[in-house]
Length: 207
Length: 383
Image 1: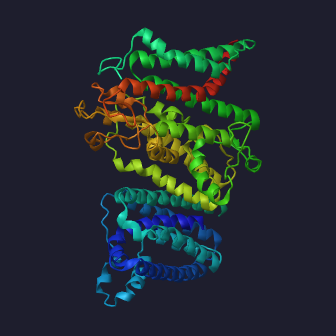
Image 2: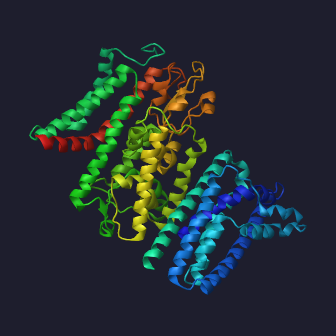
Image 3: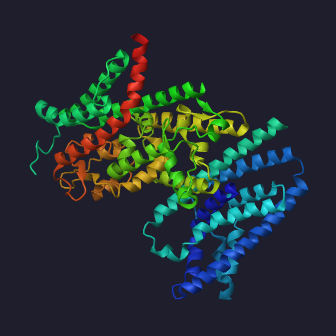
């Protein structure tokens, strides 16, 4: 649960950086008022949670079907952890980060009431390294409940960044928070790299 | 207030320096000897004498030469080395090893250090429990005394604690002085926000897991103090992380950059201390009227606390640890110790004298115990 929460934290900062400029205007429309913002934000977060539970079910089913041996699970999770963790670290240190949010296509949605739901779906399906890592973790869990818990932790970690959205416009040092978010992402990558190496060595020693 | 010396020098005459050093001489005498020097143990008495004289000579030289950093660093580095030695000596005496077992954790026999503080805050606030397996009162390095010491030092000195009180900072400060010129010269300023990212991570993970995650997984100084017994793949991985971070951030990078990279890029307590710079009365000021923007101070700052922008704006950033390196490097004394409320350029000597007295007194009292222990062990070999 803790690992998943850390991943969620790293994913949240990535999401905000890439999608912030698309999500902010819709969720914080100036004339909407606090109640509207909270309602939209709730729909947005609820949709994300539902999509994550769906992903948790799929990942668990995939793991149960294909990753049958415990040692094989250690190998696969170790290698995938290392691979995705490197992607995460690369994301945080890369100088050529170009914000490219899949939620940009939100402009094509005509029914504005559906926008938060649409944003929730697109945002949770943005296949960033953090999501790949949590999918790996979820696939290697013993029971479906553990898989849901992993995604719940991930959801909680990433949601932390969205909760202060209504006040984001008032933040004076956005750049500093952005920098800290990116660096935290890199740290999460390093944590999972170490975890991946530990899993892999554990797998080799037990194999 | 009339300046004691001319505007471009902090030097004082021999007599004046002696006069300024006298209060420190008396106070350290009381603290180090307890007011009653004990001569029954020759090695112990000699260790106390050498420590007492050494410290007061350094303080005298700060006034006499007008330089701060060089003499501060001597005591700071000796403090770091002696503390590690004392800690290891204690651990070996108690456990016959530098590593601790699960039994030591269960019985709360782990010495506390100030780096745990950022992880204690949230769990203490929400669960009213302390998530460190140490003793609250009594015993070696107990929790309450360290928290009180750190709190007092941080309120008074701000991030000055990192250069005048932290018994780990001396390690990378020492290594950062080994080369005369840096090999790596350009490092992005963005990295100085890294301790805040570490703080965010460790504070939240510690609150959720109710374990001191920084100590368990990250702290590079585990390599020179105490660490978990290597019995599993996980504990081996932890040991690997400790050693890698120690070699990378405390030894190699400081040598190559001439910067205190562990303090600048990792330490979560440094992040909290940086914020405390906002409330402390002491600061470092830039007198824009005197400054010719040579940026020598930016080059020498070991903590990335000064950027070209900061100098142009005449403001030192929150990352400043008041080590005095920039103050010593400035030939025009445009950058100087100051007190909040007094305009930059005014009462430079007064501000420096007050700051030096407070900060040196803190490090002298805090470090004397471990230095005496080390010297006593050395003298015992000969006497």
